[in-house]
Every structure is written in structure tokens, then in C-alpha cells.
View 1 (cartoon, rainbow, N blue to C red):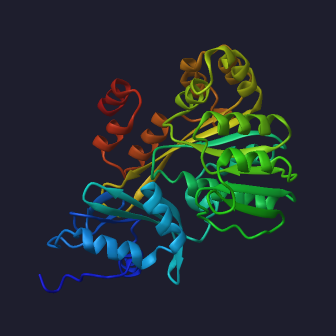
View 2: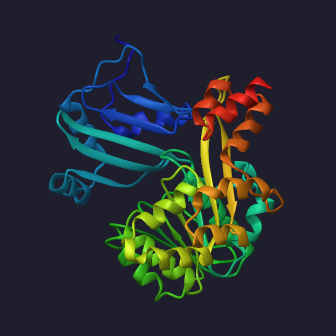
Length: 360
């Protein structure tokens, strides 16, 4: 037991996380220090004692500035970008029944290219060159949406000569201006909310607006308006595939507005990238499974008529413009031989069809 360290500053835990290639570090009350490695959450040291409420309070105070500490006392939770000599982190502290819970997402500060991430560059390239419209990156928490979004924004930064404005909560990847002028704003630090920042954005003459997350009616409505009025809007949503993404956008609007919104979306949507990170069978990392919907005349028609259930069929026949369904992407990973059959089946949309594929 004596060789298990007990640290009094979060930076010491973060350096362990960086050393072992983790995506997240958890320091919760009444549970041992834990990390998420290759998608799996487990204690850092198997026999470590659970952290006490006194220890998590000490750790919270070790890195929170007075402003964040006051906000935590007032609201019960706080999240922001934390930076030390080792790098940048997305930090979140919440008050709960037993004490404080601290969670860090370790941000790989190097913005990787689309090729390095394994994104279908040829199919995405035309979508980044529009002067207006909406390009969405979707997936569950921890599926790499922010990484993909930063990669696409950085490609535009090199490829075009425009004004890119990002609205994030918090800023994760720092984008240096290349051929574009890049302006990054953090919600709660530089502005009160996404809607307020988006309203301000339209007065700042941007060409490309990156919205960290479209999380409510007001943000979605403003993003659609921006996409219609001559801005290319890149944004993320917590949805698993293209049909669900479109349904989610429409469902936030009052029923009497939905016909009008369907027309807006059918005209302004450029594409939807949905992604998952699938653990490799040998435990050495994760593979990217990606679904891509490109807004063709047939897709636009489906959206306008509210027939999103027909989209998977259209995507099957739209391979010439780079469209691919999530299930086809998962099949490709299985054929490649890096991912287990159970993992593919668990993540597939049409399980009976996937079982048939395995039995062939």
C-alpha cells in the first residue's frame, strides 16, 4: 500500500494521465483516482484508497482561481479550460452528496490533420469550400467531435483567406491564424452564453463560424439563420447518426414552425459527419468509425418532406459523393481485422443485418 502515491495537487495526477496516454482523469470523492484509457474507465492504481472529501476539496483548491471557486460555491458546478506547463485540459468540478468530483479531459494541443485522424478528406473537401451553410459533426460524449471540428477548422484556416470565429465552452484547441484571421471566444470568459456570442458574431463580419455545441432552441435557431445569411457554420451535436441529428434539430422547435425549419435545413445543410471511437481488440487504442451524409437533391427532398427514415437508403446509393452509413463503416473495420465482432454488433444500427453479414 505504501508505494501508492497520494498527491495534493491535480497537476501530479495530470502528468500521470499524459504519460500513459489517457483521455480523462477522474478525482471523485469516495472513489479511488481513476483514468479513462482507450475508452475504459478504471482506477489508476488497483489498490488505491478512495479519496476523502477533505482530499478532493484540497485538490479543488489546488487549481481553482478565486473566480472559479466563487462560481463553484454559488452554482454548485464549474467548467473551464485549465492550462499548466504540461498542456491544456477541459476541467469540470461539481459539488455532490459526498463532496467534490473533479474531472479533466486531456486535450492533445496539436491540431491533427484530417488525414491523420482518418477522415474521408476527398469527400469532406468540397463541404469546407462553401461560402454558406451548415456542416455538423455529431457523436456521443468522448467520440472525438471537438478533435474533428478543430481539424476541419484548421484545414479551412490554411485553405481559405477568410475570417474564422469560434465560440466554445471552453476553448480546447488553440488555432493560430494562418491564411485566415482566427478569432476564438470562450463562453463564460469572453461572453455570457452561446446565443449572446452568436448574435454578436453576426456583427463581426465572419466568413466561418465554429459553434462548440448546438445545445438549445436559441443556439440552433441562430446557427441556422447564420448559415442562411452567408456564413459557413460548423457545429457539434450529441446525436448518433444523420437521421437522428435532423430529427433532433426539428424537435427543439415548436410544432407550428417545423415545416418552415425543414425547408431552411433542407436548403442550408451541407453535410453531417457522425462518429464513434471503437476500442481495438488488442487493447492498444481505438478506431474511428464514421458516417457521412452529403446534402444532395434526394437528401434535401427527404428533409423537406419530413421523411428522415428514408435517409439510410439514399446514403447507400450516394457512395459516388462519399456517403457512407455507420454500419458500413463498422463493417469495414471488421474486415480490416482490428475490432471484435461483439463490439461491432453492439454499436451497429441494424443488428439483424449485421448478424447476417457475420454469418456469410
